[in-house]
Image 1 (cartoon, rainbow, N blue to C red):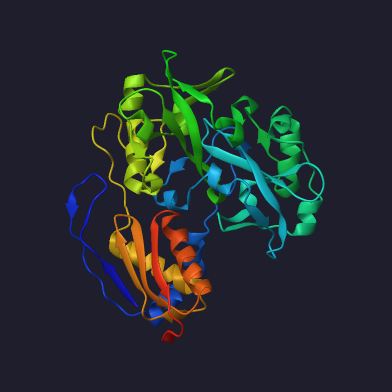
Image 2 (cartoon, helix red, strand yellow):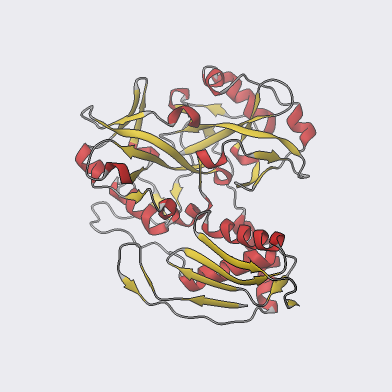
Length: 385
């Protein structure tokens, strides 16, 4: 198999020449894939916050952005149990906006109502594989609620629902909790009361219980119809009448946005650092940190964050392909990485294999960042490592 990085134009339009890597897979790589400690990086899930409603993870890890998904993408997806038996489908999410945390997922199943499953119970949260750690029998005995709105009006019911799957937890500030479904379409105002736009989507990392962005469709500013602004949840105040950005309209419009025509930039690490830095969440005495390193107060430049190179990204994609294809590697496949995006080309022997390889790449770089050019051409030479 060949891994190749090509010269490309970066996100901001600057030319960048990448190193070209040609290599064959080795036993060392396979042992890396088999390593339990390395595999944990793919499915990493921190313990849930000890007190729900007091904030989620205290660090912003840009490398996790590739594992993020939009609420609209995950809504309605089937959920399977630990034995991969279907238990129901996703109906909504309960999130702590200011804390940047995902508390749980409302999952419908047989019978009336929905069960609230903690984010910590999900071992996989990709659009093609939503899987919880519990069995179907355990899920079936969970209490049911008639929907997110009814649940949010009863903090004790939230505590009981979460305690069924995990250890008992307290809901410190129920007023901050919202349904992701009701967030979409909610107006966002600035500190002066001017309407900036409405929430278009909610971008989250379920297995890490992390709420990354509110994706805002603006009604002000230039090219409003072609842009989607990214807003960190911690910069938003949750009020009875709606959501208020702790900033001016000018500051909002000066922030980072993605283009509607190419929204996959949302998973890029440098975009995340720019967004959180713009709202002052990367510096100061009581702010969150990036990759465990606090930025000194008064810093005037964006902190440096370790971002995967094209070389490393190609290797990560290749490793994930091997890990999910029984170590049988199609020798005629080529993986090309450019600025966080991956191109797959070459020949495979079936549509199923083509889909499996693409799915593995998506797990690393995110859906929308994979250009699948693999062709099905019958028998293909393979090698077992």
